[in-house]
View (cartoon, rainbow, N blue to C red):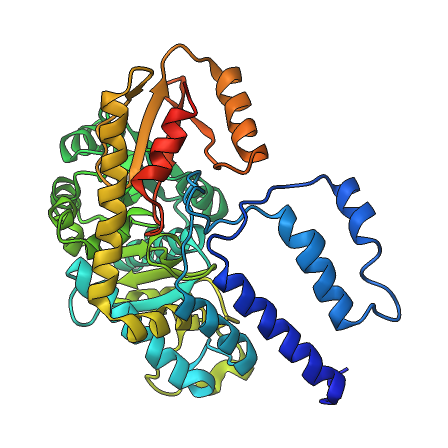
Amino acid sequence: MHRHDASAEVLTQAVVRYAIDRIQLDPAPLDGPRTPDELRAMAGNTVTPGGIGGLEALRVFGDVLAPACISVDHPRFLAFVPAAPTEASILFDLVVGASSVYAGSWLEGGGAVFAENEALRWIADLAGMPSQAGGAFVSGGTAGNLSALIAARWKWRHDSDGANDRTRGLVIASSGAHSSIVQAGLAMDVDVVSVPADEAGRLHGAALRTTIDELAEPDRVRLFAVVATSGTTNAGMIDDLAGVADVCEERSLWLHVDGAYGGAGLAAPSVRSLFDGIERADSFIVDPHKWLFAPFDCCALLYREPRVARAAHTQRAAYLEVLQDDDDWNPSDYAHHLSRRARGLPLWFSLATHGTDAYAEAVETTLRVAHSGADLIRTSEHCELVLEPELSVVVFRRTGWDAERYREWSDEQLAAQEAFVVPTSWRGETVLRYCIVNPLTTVDDIAMVIDSLR
């Protein structure tokens, strides 16, 4: 199975050629899903006792399976949160896979971990975190949020000298927080209390203080962390981070900032002031696979005091003792994982290739396009803004349409391979939103979408 013969060389060349051809598509086709029955009929049986051969498997993928996946990096993929990895990061993802690096420990993957930490340091500096800040790359925002809250709970219990070891914890988050916070609560068996957000979906320090004061005394004792958001997924709004940090300092609470989508805005000087207060966070996440041009799956998880995370997450086993004899930086110690690929290396390679100035300009480009598109909505006769945009998410309505008409239009756009935009809801109303993270998305792309709504 692992023979390096002539057929392996041919397959290697075919796979590399496929990757290069895919990267060079300008743009890649938008494509779209098919039913399981359709895919079964088109692909046939692919997992068989004797195998179908690498070239045939690659053909099935290229001809059948890949076209049944929407291209998230298409300039008019504007739904959810898209992705737009650089060519450098995509190519280096091939290198990461080919290198067979285990990046859970310094002993086995020190070179890779060193490079990942260089990328983490850049992100920590953008956020104004102290020199000792550090962490690891995890699979996504859900894993990052969960890991940060596990560390927060460990510190709460540790600081209480055992008094809270059997106490069910409590976390406070905004009503605009990502769904993964509630999911983390379920996984950890902690309660999550929601603070009412303002009309734009932001959490404010005053509302947080009121919510805490209104808790029953036993619940205030259980409270160990507050989650703020720097770029809500649905509306792209940034919480009152400074005000929230004030409350957390007053009450000795861990402040976690979820910047999975919006944290990349830290790289853009034009909006950096909106994040003031983030430098006071105890933990922070941002997903480079969203707005920092890395391939899936990649979330940067950072701690102000990594020693706390290490105490919370280090796994103990006889065969792992050799890794815990010194102070090496083992990424497995900073999140709820052990085995891990060096998922931060494609980001590092792209940063090293292009430089951080290019990253700042790319984020600024997406912001300019997003806000120019909002200007088109303001001047249109059939659409109107629901919210004034803050980052690169724009929420708007097509006047006179109901939920069914929005869905019909969305399906028509994808079927015609024009764009991928899906409806969302805002305060009980079905509306539209677009999210731009791709520097290749233009104002003309947004104009086409708006015109199609006539």
